[in-house]
Amino acid sequence: MTEKKVLTMQDISCFGQCSITVALPIISACGTETAILPAAILSAHTGGFKGYTFHDLTSDIPEIIEKWVQDGVCFDCLYTGYLGNATQIEYVAELRKKVISED
Image (cartoon, rainbow, N blue to C red; front, side, top):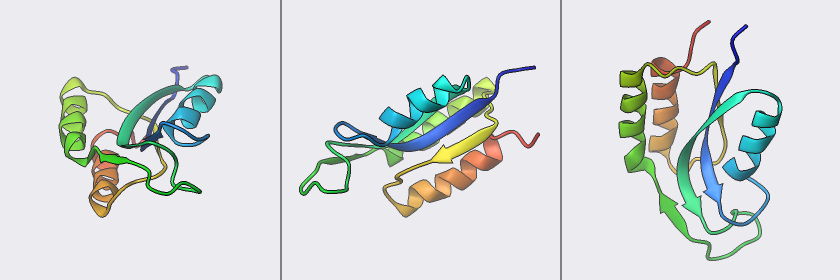
């Protein structure tokens, strides 16, 4: 039996118990290979903090997707968290078509 692979696309919150910083170790601890696709970098999570920084990574996503397609990278499922804009939601649909296994 081959190990399942999960792709998680969400933000990296530098402070706070959320985002990729929490999802990655939990999913990995379940014995599932986990890859990340950061959507943004925030200084802190958006709940309870005012004036947090937000670095949008939307422009990097298409190149990452295409590189995965070229390399034949495929995932069994996609887990999303915080997405910073509507374009990132469109990329989720693209990811589902291009790198998520239908098996």
